[in-house]
Length: 162
Image 1 (cartoon, one colour):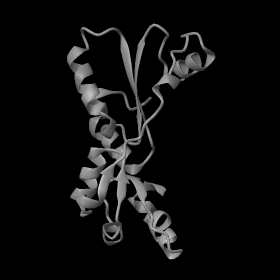
Image 2 (cartoon, one colour):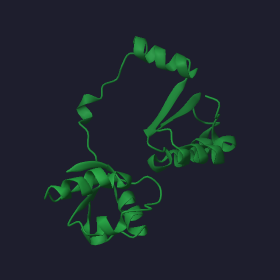
Image 3 (cartoon, helix red, strand yellow):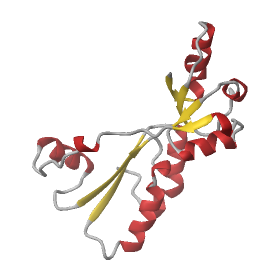
């Protein structure tokens, strides 16, 4: 089993096949699936992390019948609140220019858009006058598509200079 995106097909699929193994890749999408449709369609099983990713693979020519959703899970009991005075919390807030009394809303993900960031921004725009003082932070993976998406909405919802 290998974990990655369709562009890792040479390592996740072709390499194991060269040694007689049947690979089962667990994939995310990364834009349009521009290559390896034939190779991926020959596999008996492809795992993806969400229904959205399955839709992207099917949209781009991969057989739906071989794709199963296996969500990424986490142990939610490992998430514990930190004291606002914790040095790590203080350092992060200072680096982002967020004072202790300001509410910080955070989205973390490859491209924030697939994590619901646009919907959060739209909701914040609606409740802005009624909400406590807030700052919305999106941590994304640097890639050309993310930069293009940020440029499209930077004037509408958030400061792009942070």
